[in-house]
Image (cartoon, rainbow, N blue to C red; front, top):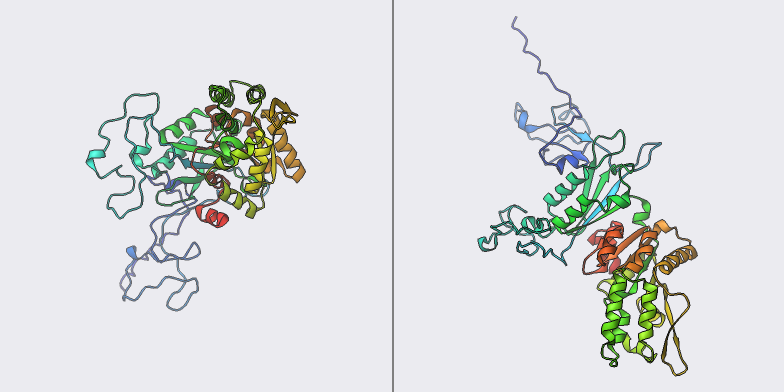
Length: 473
């Protein structure tokens, strides 16, 4: 009797720890091997045709979950999968501990400190050269020499593309992995979303789970960490770090500064420019304004000093300024989106109430607060201010006052400003955003935007460009 053929051993599929050479791949929720194109999901068992021969040959159809005579249930060799839950609800008795990092490429202000040439933003093409393989196909513009020695780090976006490249994301993930994790946690998981363009994104949202240990560094200090600051300079990126909470996704009150935020100018400088005598008045006012915005002068004292210089100016100057106010790009669309979302809006200005109220009415803003000046019987400025000056502390008080009136928790408030007199307001709000701000404000604020349109604020709430298009339509 002939020996019976040896039974073929079958290896059961296992949940393992297959690592790859890709840092990005190792930080996805589900890492798996190459799968046949006809893979129907985690509930489906598919035969690997590369390692199995069928005798006699017959047409292959993937198992659809229902056993039959032609497709009996069976276990076949397969790859190893690691199934994680970094973005799922936490297990009972625990709380979510995720950090959202929104990376925004500063296309408006490409780094000029480096000697390397600034290349145009790459766009999708049918070129055979892989994305980020080389900065250009033109040898004449290829950076053959490294940048000259300077205090600034090398501008890496020149080499790998004027957008958020895969290597940029990898570099950031590696940076974040260096911070200590909570006790009992050995590795960090991440996932990402390109919020505008999947091929050449300018805005990418990364979810890190868990967040770095608060015992090592609170979030307010983590935002200012030297490694993150250097990364921003190297890649020409703004990094906004926020806890992944429901309040981040659903704000209910947004408060704006006016000058250099809702509008591109400083109102008091515009007023000074209309005065012909004395000839140096505009320069004096501009100098005081600049020093106040840098925090070198207390805003209240600086404002009184500037108003005193306007003595004798006719009250009608406010109406003369209406046509010359330049509203910041994206403001009407942003406010339209807020209306659709049911978000209340306010403007608190260190300028003048007549002009601030007029602008708020034109834009459909719910609340407007600013300074009142004394006008004499002849309809001219006396050079005095009426009531409390809307400065640094008063802006903070108004934010709290408006939120209280609307029954809104401070965690659901957002403040946007550019000057030192906005810092207390930015620190009090759930999210404080420095908009094309002065250096000190950029460093102190919890987030910063340095773009061309204020519509970018919606990306910090987690909206994609597709969703933003629906909101501003």
